[in-house]
Image (cartoon, rainbow, N blue to C red; front, side, top):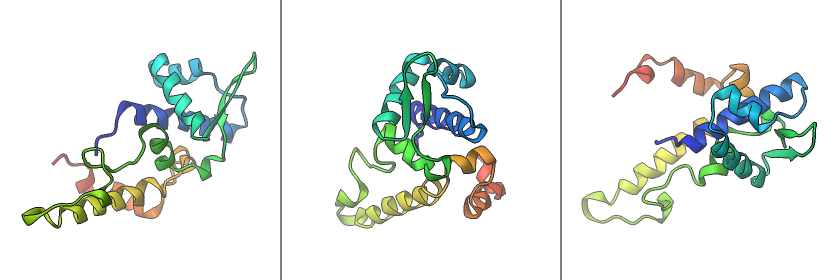
Length: 154
């Protein structure tokens, strides 16, 4: 899976908002978000707009303005954030795997792409922003992290 800069920036910004929620602090400005994770401000503004349109963050104008999560961090999955900026997580040539049709030797390839999507969902849909901020990943996700092979480049 290729994780785009937009997806990475969106998750990182959402994690800052989740941590601020846990502290009970005021909204976080775009400048604060950009500085905290060394994110390009213009690109971050686009990402925040996507998160706002998806209903994951609220923006507040004014001197006390900034961004905050629209839902509790435990109710927002990493998948929710990625979908807000990228759309479907697993697509092949711009199509959802169930829309593909292969012939001959590749007839069963669609099943592989469906399995890849299911695997991504298993991790990303079941890991909330709160899980990441607190370092308490779901057991099946932590098991993957703990596997030595997970850390090896192939």
